[in-house]
Amino acid sequence: MAIDHTTLFVPEDKFQECLNFYLEALKPLGYQVRHQFGEFVVGLGSINEDSDSYKRADFWVFGSKTIPERPAHIAFACHNHTSVDAFYAAAIKAGGKDNGPPGLRSFYHPKYYAAFVLDPAGNNIEVVDHGV
Image 1 (tube, rainbow, N blue to C red):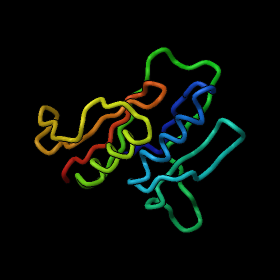
Image 2 (image 1 turned 90 degrees about the vertical axis):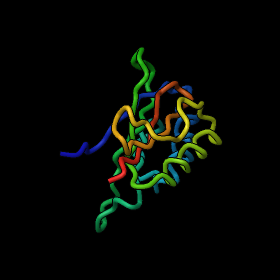
Image 3 (image 1 turned 180 degrees about the vertical axis):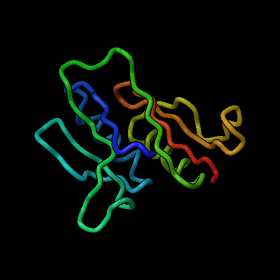
């Protein structure tokens, strides 16, 4: 069974910076703002995942006055190395910090191709192609 959606909590004072980061970093995967509720709740989703009139949002960014002490790790799946490379370039350009450039991570499995970037709040964001 697949994960339906994920929520990432970021500090309210970094909310817009984080949202802008995700909009740029995930653009190569087709992500856009799909829903917004108030100032600090935004749902992002890929235009590639829409069905009929439903705009799917599987990645939510919440601005919060309090956030967990430990940063999150979130991995987005794709189906080619080009998307991993494009994510990494877009994320770095959007202000992310390198946490592992695009490449094979054969210690996970022989076709695990991924890149890792820290967002402005310190969360570890990964895009991975499993080569299937």
